[in-house]
Length: 311
Image 1: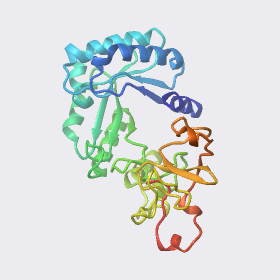
Image 2: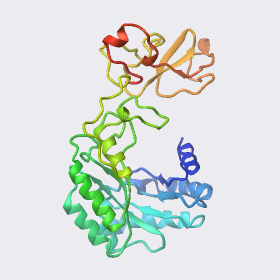
Image 3: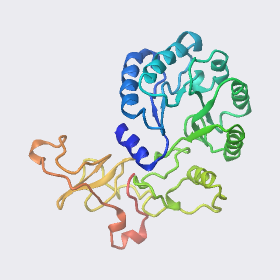
């Protein structure tokens, strides 16, 4: 799946970060080294591929633990690629000032800063300003809400951060293009997995991020959610063990009603056309994987209740 995402980004001509997402990467150094050896060999010749080798250290010492880990993984990648490498810093990638005092030797290296606008404010920007005196900074994760990824949006503080990034020419990546039911998600639960999102598929955070990227005013008022994304009454949709051919919607968050054949459909996280090896042998017949949606239901209940593609 990871290679699929990387290859899709390459095809679209956009930057993609290959990330070792770990709070204790020093405990998995050999696995990380082998991973980045493979990734840099396969993708390291492409200029839009970036490597982030330790996403979020927590309370490890920079000098004793984090820096030596970085030095090892950087040396592995440099055998195959000269592309940008981003280095995680302590306290969930906030201690960029400490890392800048004793940086990793090498070229085309940057240090990551993470912020969540309703938690991290001027004090963290001051740490970034200090670090910029000697190293490059890349904000590989930021959100409009609390550090939990949920909670209260703080769009004014987010704008202050983005203005700060523009002033100092700091590249950034927003958390998150997902439809998880969290404040920082850009998409409403059940939004299309194919992109090209309608305004009614975006959360408030999603609208804000889109408007900042396009340098356009944020819609006001925000549009109502698409009818198919609105939570239906209890019992209207199907459980994962039930046939969803008639309801065409799912109760479980993150699942979609996929058709197997004319007689059966089921709520699944994903579906690959053909025989599913997880099916019992007695039911080992091919799945069409056609997505069934409430938009297809043509009866009075569609007017009486909102409808939903996924839960």
